[in-house]
Length: 414
Ligand code: DSN
Image (cartoon, rainbow, N blue to C red; front, top):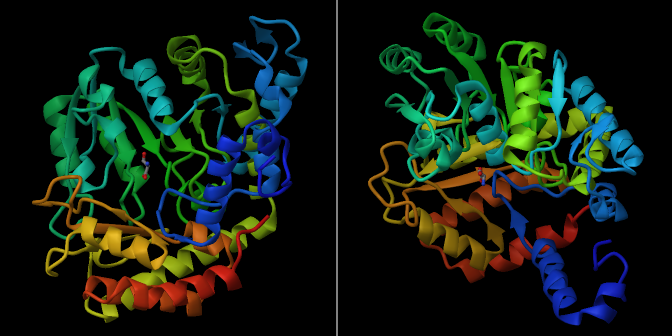
């Protein structure tokens, strides 16, 4: 159990040092507004499941086929998570809920489908892609022969370029998806390109998984051969990954996760995933995701009305990527100012960014976590005005009281 929920806790008695750190994190989250697009606040039920005694259990293998005795409960939990996942993502033929993270999910899926040394094509990190889509500092850029596509002058995916790169490189796997791409992806068009060059299509929906599960934006399930995701971003579950696969490749995918890439699954995280999927199957989740999307659209509108540039000129999902190149500040500077004001954001490269990754010319914002706190238009308007003020050089301390007021009026959900 979370230390703040049941203080004085056993942890505080047994290990006050760790308890103090965790309590500081509770306080940090309570007194900060999270606008990091990949973060959210999962429920107390998810946290309870993820901290449960099943953490002690080894369960290498899959339900009904384990390498250890005493796995009947782990089997039940994992099968429940799998069934709920397939119900949530309509059209999914198989679900693997064991990946420890999104990167592990991608690595496992790519090894299954392309094989070590195989050719892959994904979106450049700077264009909005992800490290695990073939970046040269990621094992996916070392183990595979990777080529990458960028975006057009407006920041949108250029399907002609995707086709060109695929025709030249002849990949076994084409990846669609990213970590700072604010627009819907035309998965059918990607599937057509993959088919043209004889590749399989992997859709990485780590960021918009919750919006897709709720049917608020288009889904690649049933179109892509394999869909990877994380469970802790818009999906609002515990930290972890998941892979949905078409039946004919499910066996390869499962073997690539275990024993290929991982040992024992984190059954406590799988229990947390099951709880989160159960929550996501309720009608309130759809309303929540509609609000996440509406809040992002309004944030984008308000920032642009104040004269800030956005990559692609808006958003279709929960992400807003501010292009700071026409201002006199860097992403790193705004990140620091925002933190001083009580806003947790992250600097992020924009397409064609001349600055290095630890500096950048962009600011990535996301509305998933503040919408979990209950934010609507009025609160988003305030946040937008604070961000504009910070970019224009306003004193961060001046905004601190406003952000604190919002934190108190919209506390973290239990
Ligand atoms: N850390 C994730 C994100 O922020 O998008 C990607 O790995």
